[in-house]
Length: 510
Ligand code: XMP
Image (cartoon, rainbow, N blue to C red):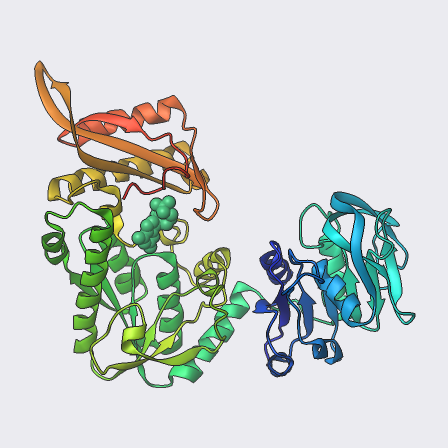
């Protein structure tokens, strides 16, 4: 069965991804494509519909983004949203001009035609507007299907081409989802057949076709992306997949054991666990600069991975857990596999080793990866765990990474995690951990004064980590964390709570 696709052309609008997500949430697979995508490419994609997104430009501005006008002659439904609608109007001979008064925010829409796009919608509806230009008039063969006090053409139709000046994809347009349903199901005739289950089914089919009887290797980190890819590929090709897990000694408490239990014992995968703690700690000795630490860790990972990969004979594919946000800016192709030189991928694999890259979850957003992971039976300990940085606990150890600071950071972080789970704060928190540096502070043990480490707790809330704020944890939760850390972990005398936001701080201290 051909995969049904709605192509969303990106004109740089802040809500472009939301359009894609709304379609997928309605069970219709959609993809964001650059506005420069040629007509021929789109034709080959054979989409069920094209949606033109909004954008920040005025269509008369120098360098304003345009699309190939032939797209309007594909014979399939097209929906232009905001800038996308103005562009359609402009291409088809309408008059688009600066608005006398900008329409911004909640606006009353007066519906003039309820036959298709606005079927089931009230005569007046609240919609979300955000535009400086407006469509003043259209050629005679267009129908105006809605207007507002400020926009004589708030929505139009010509055959199966539609334009709407407002944003149906945002929650501030309460009936937006119904309008999108009308477009996708009544106008385009789409089926709601995209779901985590259908994704798994088609991904397995595609992996089988691509890989055949060749061997695949995958670097498993314990994070959700590589874990999902591992299970997906294993379902498709079984023992032809070998996962390589490099234990760099900087992992969370019990993480290695959990990975072995999950992937080797439960899923019965070929898993090479490499105990490389000594190698990493040796190379990290005397290094306190955060950037240098990261580089050393990245470099050592590649060395270890290469060594193990080289021992596995006749490998043809390298799998990676690349996800949609990772490749948004690169406008990458959607081929499942593309031939690459080994040194172009994450690991500089041995000279001359030519691997093909396979990225089965390259089209998924993070929450979709979680849904797929659940469908595949991955445990909650992987599916809903806080993100963990590539350099591991080294990102939370200020100054040199020593075995003693590593022990304190690991054990204290485990206590933070346990207490957040116990108090119900874990799921409301983006990341929470303990950090430790070289500061020593005086404490009393029995009657003795002694010097011990200062441990700082960080718990932040965030959306996608670009900005963050500290979580307002109740004092009794903080008190419990503090008393457990000082009582259960030797060598700690003080506990502090980090209350700076990002910016100016970052989430990780190094
Ligand atoms: P910062 O500390 O920059 O972190 O506010 C933002 C998010 O990225 C994670 N992070 C990393 N992830 N390699 C990674 O894979 C890294 O070097 C790295 N540094 C930070 C961090 O945990 C947070 O979620």
